[in-house]
View 1 (cartoon, helix red, strand yellow):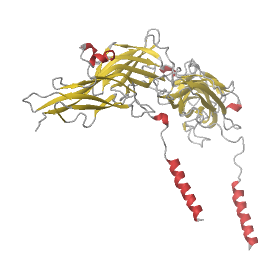
View 2 (view 1 turned 180 degrees about the vertical axis):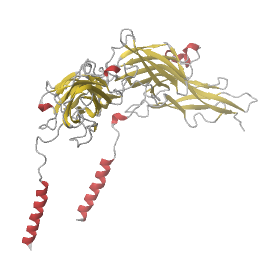
View 3 (view 1 turned 30 degrees about the vertical axis):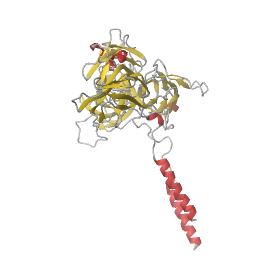
Length: 322
Length: 303
């Protein structure tokens, strides 16, 4: 009886653990170029604390990730939201002086950052992306009459980013011929998904012109992230709040290639995405290879833009009643 | 076993009750609330409803500073009909009390007495109703200290920002004069500097009258007072520690809801982002009010 029971248990265990150990997709096979994230930030736990007292030196800790699949060649962030005569630059007297602990900039100046290299972005071998940590110290100096004050601690970050989308496109050099089976159906492509960046190519429409010898494309671009799109020429110098309306919701078309050939006639080069977060650009007069049947080729679109993200935490400053 | 069970239950009961109740931290109490400053309360029976002629009685008062500021040189003055009574002790008393604080959450209180003697009634009078009152005059201060948004985005082009410049609606600050509203206005001057200005609305929410704080003794005396010394308030304000210039000064409160305009003379370097600062408004003024009671003087009939 005991032997039978033991045998049953072993078999069950084999089923359970054996079935559960199916190998997941091998490293390198994962389509990592998905997602709508770029640079993300958050405050570290209790840094800042919810309540800080007059005369205290306190820390503001911030974590920053590059969760997208592109590098950040240039970025800057600013601390704001509070009067710098009330929360001033300070060093914690109990902490040894460290170069990575920064007194809150008294002049409101920004802190530069970049994410460069494979270890600093999401790749097929690095699923987490890049990571940074920043620690600021400040001191509270409440005016004499003030017993309590609610103050926002805000971080605005602006950075340059890219989206590179690779879309499979079916081209038909003889669209009028319908008397044979086509290798693929040329038509609009929607739901192209995300490409590991906050801005994505969300659709491609095509139109055959000049008797099938040339192509016209309409590409839909969408801001799928939660931040604000910026003209890349002004994203860094005008950060965080000096943008005029023409600087906002702009995406630059950096390059378009079809079947390995650069497409020259795409307009507009600087897309106005509007408040809806969706914009379009058109490529005209693209020569296509004249084959006997429809065929699949690759359209590669590279976009360049600035992006602004923000985080904010409200804290309470209290006097000590002295 | 039973003892263990009892111990366990006790631990659960007291453990839960100790951890379950959240308490306000000590520094959470705000004493700058309410519309009271000095409060006077006539004591029961002092004065009594009826007194006989040629007898002594007392006017007793509980005095309390229920506001947030201290009273240093306050005055109490006894008012009476000199044809029918006279004070046996001083007619005027000095007053000093401390306002609400952690040590004294209700404000400091005291009890004061005036001794009065009635005169004989006229031969043909059986009774006479006479009003006995006590007037208080004191210097007080209202302090309003509030967070306010300094925002250079005067056209509201930026939607997502740390704060938005909005009118502050306030209630009371632990004094009879209250700052009820602060309206911020910002504009960019020719030098590109941000000029903040604030309309500060003031209301008399107490039960008395505002007087010039430098004429306290005149008001609580027989001296003539200038009509210009009524409703006179000294106003000062700061933004983030920087003094604001207020006008009109001296400020005279007209009606229940009046305002003073305060601005920063040299402007601010235009900030790149909106931020929260502190605006402090201090009102210095005198205040006066009266409590009274009708006393009936009865003829003393000797049998």
